[in-house]
Image (cartoon, rainbow, N blue to C red; front, side, top):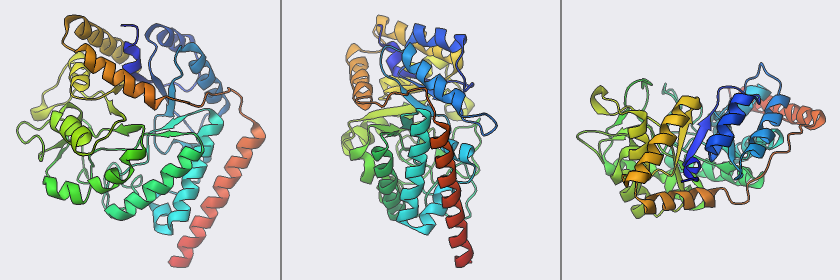
Length: 351
């Protein structure tokens, strides 16, 4: 199965090119690579790394920053999605355009956002500043505006966290998050933004949480829930794109799966692309999937389905050039600064 790597995306901790990364890419041929963006580092090595990554892979890869606010880390002044949403649709579109421009200049072709989770003002949680609003309709409107600008910049969006994590305030990263909203509430609130944008998405990011409305006892992460991945996402909502999930070994009651078990179950239940962290996770996931295919634990038709969805998601991907014009980058940073000043001025007038 020479295509197994196309079911995996590698999150790499270093933003520059090197022989360890080159060896991994040539051996495993993953479908995508996530790189960090740090304000303390110049952007040029990232542009070079993205071009080298693309050149090392036989199939054009998805290339995205490993943090939704990564472009802001470089420019340092972009407002949060919530601030833009409060200023109105034109501000959201401007934020999206600048985000897409920054990604495009560096050589990225995809983006793990926007966040479609509903988070009310004043709520503390993992998505407080990344969320547009606590209002479903407003979030849907902002999402459409944001996605239009990313598409114009040839950036493939991967919004999340399906089917919504509005109740994730105070969540601990080492514990399974359990959402206890009834299905009717999820449908008329959390799912509204997803229902609005799913038809235009190549990729959707799956929530790491469990949902009692679908899996009451025991609760299981959405990526391991057939009721969510098949019954809700594919059957009820009719989504035809690729489902992306971080490889998570945490299940209910503090129990854990092996990384290989998590990879096999996630694909079996309907995930098409798994994000793995570093070389060790890449090796374990690849080996487990390879063995499962050979033994029949992963049916060939399921693998073919996942590969087809990933292949469609990657059609006509932009390829990085490896060249970052200092003039263009400086112009981008100035535009970000001007937008930041405009937003702060609007905030002062409102206050």
